[in-house]
Image: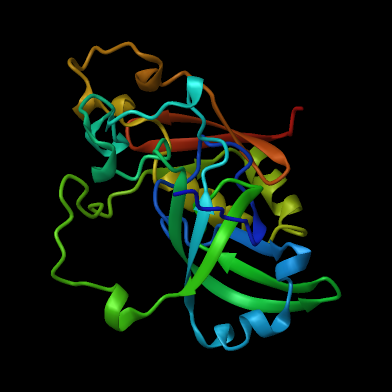
Length: 250
């Protein structure tokens, strides 16, 4: 049975590439996004009443999660298991699925009225920029929150985040950019505080403390494309140092 799904709009976020995107929604609470509807769906009556809800579910397409040959794998390597152990794809949130559909619960900050229709302003996003959105549903705490649910191999984080510090150069650049990007310092701190490096870069996933892979090289300079710049940083243990903000390269 063939089913045709048509995106209702596209979400614009600060995440311009897959590396650096929080692994779950609301881990970077300040990460902003806007949802713009395509003309056919840009109708104010379609979002009437939505402003009464603090959070919404976004159902979207992993449009950049394309495997060679278009094939999917029954087994995947979740980041939470260090990238070394496999589980069934349906026991994971991997973007590489038979149908590349994702879902995120994000905060609805405001609904803006524009000449082209409503625009949803969001925070806590964990979605790549330009991602097509299939549907929106309100989050209902009384039914969507299940306090007695089991979390399998992905228990809640232990709230231990990386310490994020800034060089004088980076701090100055951020202050200047905050004129146009509110709360930029906080957003960067939240994104890097969750340590976006692959899980195998953490010593507890390594076969030896002398592991020399790039993830454990404290001299390595990482880059994340955020907004319109490349964020350069280094990591040593649980400490992250932001070096500078470079102009985005093409």
